[in-house]
Length: 444
Image 1 (cartoon, one colour):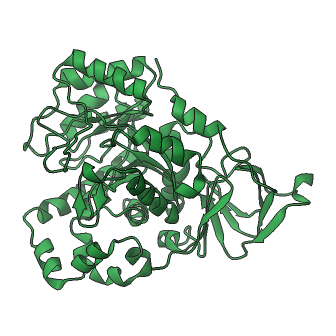
Image 2 (cartoon, rainbow, N blue to C red):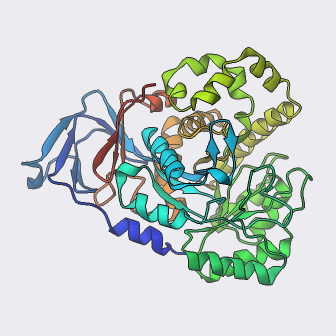
Image 3 (spheres, rainbow, N blue to C red):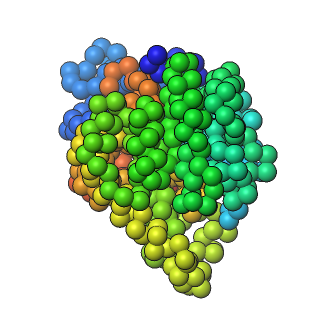
């Protein structure tokens, strides 16, 4: 059975608030999620886009007009891999999974132009109530989807002690029967997809046995759910693709991918989310302390994090850490494998694992990942497509990721052209969500 759109996604796609009057966005250069439309008008009525381009329909006559001369308009960014409610300043753990902290994180995503967020596991038991609340009110932040607690390995990933999982909502089946039961239970709760942790963290913890993840994938597909798997190494990815996993949720970082795997992923439609920033974040901030003085980064950091990272002693200690050479090699291999899967026509998604740890900075990480996509050889336009139309497609969200008639009016207005320089994605002027202006320029 082919995975279909879960009920929560269907509900969010239908239940949208109405606006008082149509709004006409004029004189902006429009990137519609797949291509540059040039200077093009966009008409919004309620929460949706009702017309793009000239000539304008009669409905535009009485619309409120907004002149975006010199601006670039693109769809709101879509994150296929993030976490919420897991950090507080320099600390992390599920003790911080509260409604207020999740909303705090979703508002930060939204301020940075990320209007849809998929929280891939480690969500607390209140995830479903919070999702229902925030998805009904654009002012509470980015739309939220996710995998509930997710399914991990007994005594393995995600490591409960290292991740601060005191209440550990992650299911940890011991055999195939329990794996199938975990999938059934999570579907009954209302998850949007299934998340598996298969990695053994470089041999530090037990890896999820093949019988368990194969049973979970088969059961999820029988129930119409997609499956995303946390991996690191090539052998894990090969076996998961053989098991017909839907999404590889991290880039392959130990060895170069081979043409056979690339071909199989393309033919099966396996999605690939590189999350290059996940390893780069371990050293990038210490290596680039001048970036801490830019409003775009400073505004994303809690004061305790900013104060720690500004200390020269912390910067030196961080860069001298035992794991930094490995992190650098992982980034290099991740970029190389991203080049290979992209050249091979593999379906790409967009994500960074932001929110899982303090150094995976919500909002900023997504714009850094756009830059890293271009370092892997994607053009700025193709990188933006990955972060909008392709990312929405990977989740099965047909109502967003594009500026087109009938789509949600989730929009990002920029002061500078990201097609000329991808770092212009940071020049945020306005963020629209469901036809409402929900955020403005990023300032400290």
